[in-house]
Structure formats: C-alpha cells, structure tokens
Amino acid sequence: MTSIRHYCGLCGVVNHPDAAEFAYFGLYAQQHRGQEAAGICTSDGRTIDRRAAIGLVTDALNERDLVELRNPMAIGHVRYSTTGSCSTANAQPLLVNCAAGQVAICHNGNLVNARAIRETYEATGHIFNTTSDTEVILHMLADAAYRDMDDPLVAVLRQLRGSYCLLVMFPDRIEAVRDPSGNRPLCLGRAGDAWIVASETCALDIVDAEYVREIEPGEIVTLSLDGIRSRRYSVPDTPRAQCIFEHVYFADPSSMIFGQSVHEVRKRFGASLARQSPASADLVIAVPNCARCAAIGYHEESGLPLGRGFTTNHYVGRSFILPSQGMRDMAVRLKLNPIRASVAGKRLVVVEDSVVRGTTTRGKMQSLRNAGAREIHLRVASPPIRHPCHYGIDFPSRAELIAHERTVEQVREFLGVDSLAYLTLDAMLACVRPPAEHFCTACFSGRYPIAIDGEFDKNVFELHVPAPAGAPPRAEVRH
Ligand code: SF4
Image 1 (cartoon, rainbow, N blue to C red):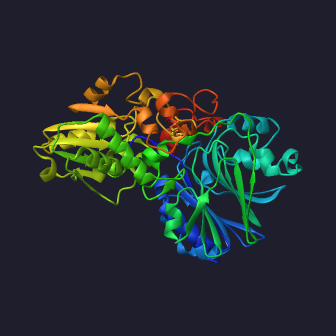
Image 2 (image 1 turned 90 degrees about the horizontal axis):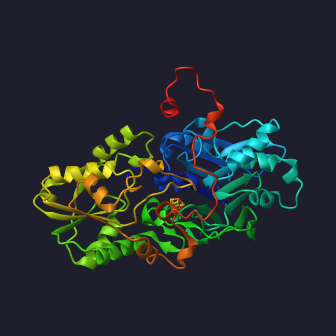
Image 3 (image 1 turned 180 degrees about the vertical axis):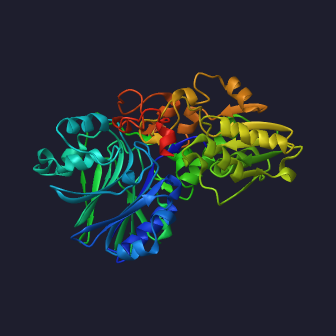
C-alpha cells in the first residue's frame, strides 16, 4: 500500500533529566507515523521552550537543540498534515503564551468540528497563526469562558468532536488525553522514575521503558514531577471507534495497539485470507514491508513456501507520506526492486496489506511480470477501501479510490493480476480482540461512528488565504 498519507505520532516524558533525548528517540521510533515535520517542547517546571521544523526527526532537531532543551519534562510530535499544509507554522508542538499562561500542544487525529469552532472565534476577532485544526484547542484554553471553570481542560474537551490523542503541556505538567472514542492509540510506560506516554509501544522499547497500560478512551493522565494521576470525562453519544487501520497498516509490527500485538493480528489477517481465498501457487511473497506479517500468516496456514520477491532500498522513506503522486511513484520504484531469480517462472501469491488508489500496486505487479512471474494471485489482507477517512488519515478522495464503485473483477483487470481476493470485513473483525463494535471500519464499510459534517478537506483553513491571480493550485504552491 502506498497511496495514503496520514497522521501523527506523539511522545511525552516526565521526570527524566534527559527528557528531550528520550522524546527524540521516541519520535525517531515512530517516524513511520509522519515524515513532514517534527518538534519537541520541554519545561523546567516554570518555562516551556520549543524547537520544531519541517523534515524527519534527524533533520528537524539537532544535537544543539537537545542540549538547549535539557529539562525534566518533554513532549514531542512527528507530523503528517491531516488538516493544514506542510509548513513550519504548522509543525508541532504548537506553543502559545496566552491568558492561561504558556501552553504547548501535540495532536494525533482530526477534529471534525474544528471549522465551526474556528469560525466562531474568528468572528470575534481571534487571529489564528496556523492552518491546523489543533490550534482551536489553544484558543479555547485561553478563552475566559473555559478558563474560569473548575476543570478548563475537561470543559474544552467536551466541546470537541472527532479523533484526538493530545499531549498538552503546561509549565508544571503534561496532560495526556485520549478521546472518548479511543480512535487513536496512546500508551503509558515507565523507565525507572520517569513516565513516558507515546502513540505506540515501539517508542517505549527504544528507551527501555516498560509498558504499563493503554491510556483509556475518555481518560486524562496528568504527568508531573510529583507522579501521575488519572481522571475521566465523557462526551455524550460517543461510541468506541478504535481505528482498525492501525492494525492493517499504520502501526509498527513490534507495537501493541489497542491491547494486541500488531504482528500477531496481521498474521491472523493472513491466515484468515489463506482459508478464505486459497490459490494454486509455488510461492508466497509479501509486497514489503507492511504485508510481511500477513504473508507469514498466509504461508503458515496454506503450507505454501514463503519467499522474498523484492529487495528494499532502506534509504527511501515511506512513499505514501510524500506529498505528491509523482514523488510517491518514483519513491516506490526506488524502494522496491523485484528479485528475478526468486520470481521468474513462478506462480505467485502476492500478499498486500491494502490497496488504495491501485496505481502503485499495479506498478509493482507489472514489475513482477517483467521479472518473469508466470501467474500473480493478489491477496489483500483487508477489505476494499471505498470511503474516505474523516478522523485523521489522509486518504485520497472517494473518486480516486480504486475500489470505489468498481467490482473486484474490475479492480483485478486494472491491477493486471490473474486473480484477486480481499479479506472480508467480518473475517478481519474476527481477527481483532472483540467486541467488533469497538472498531471504526468506516473506510471499508461507510459507517462513520462519529458524526461528520460533509466531505473532509485537509486544506479547509488554507482557503482563508486568497490566491494571487494566475497562481497554481494550492498543492503545487505548498510543495
Ligand atoms: S475510517 Fe478507516 S482509517 Fe479512518 S479511523 Fe476509521 S478505520 Fe481508521
């Protein structure tokens, strides 16, 4: 899968003298969650300091930054822009100095009512510095209407709709928040006296922290130099909606997500696919890397040998996160090269984790044909994607999705394979920890668990800027 972009990774550290370094490595381990920008804020208990820039973690932050940020509390963020453009102003954490004092924030997810909130504030003269949905939360925290309440953060959170895991830093503490739907993952870990929160457990592993538990949906965990405490809040009519795509593709296989090993779940997807859609073939290969676990599951269940069909250029980033299709296509060709000796003359089962636009998958299938594959039986370890995501994943528009309003046979023809089968929705849900109703499957099923307001436009706030006459479309301006 190479055609979608997303989404973000968070890491917060408290009570460690090198909190910034821990956060840096926690972000590095979660680089797969976003490659456009990275940043860290730290606090000495009185003042928050910030460094953030466009680029990978290693580009955005240098050794000097980490020395200057040396403090016992840190929050950090890797970003792909789900709302708002790829710009320095939108790099997170956002930091403001407002009536509530200094506040910094990082966000993973997407607020479906950010537009309405922002328009209300703009109508009263508020000035926004970014085009990201996250900034509305800072305006709300600074608003006297919330500031004067018993628990201003909870009062603000109760007004938000959509998907959000947040790390909100005040000079004396970090508030780690997971929205009541639990749409994105957030976990808690411990290394000695230090506490760590992160989107994925792979960030805990890198700093030798022990996994303690998930932050629960609708829970706020306050982390300070005095320890941690938890409180709960609710938003009426919010069903549980854990993103099943974290298990299909987004999360690192080494991570525990929603209380389950990503690797094990993906293996079960593959085994289920083998039972549901067997094929007469000589070899099972994965379209690396994300489909490897599912390919292992298919191989173990089917008894077909598992082989390697492609080499991977490890110096090319996750291609779908690149901002234009042209760049993504080039990156895919750079990244994957078929191994002729492995595939020539063979009947292949090719396991993919998902197919979005189909253009890159078709390219990969063509390269296998060019390398001499005799038959290609494509097995996709998730159902057809027919609907966009409104909760923080930057899928292409409905019309660009290859499975939208096309039959499986039409998709097979487009991809140029001998046979094509997808894992069914029920079979996929049977592979994750029940109850199935706790998962969002909207991009497959079209059933959106959290109410949405029309079609999502990631550049909704960019449209406030009048384009100069003759200017190219915004996407070209940005990149
Ligand atoms: S629509 Fe798909 S990608 Fe978006 S939250 Fe739901 S399952 Fe995840």
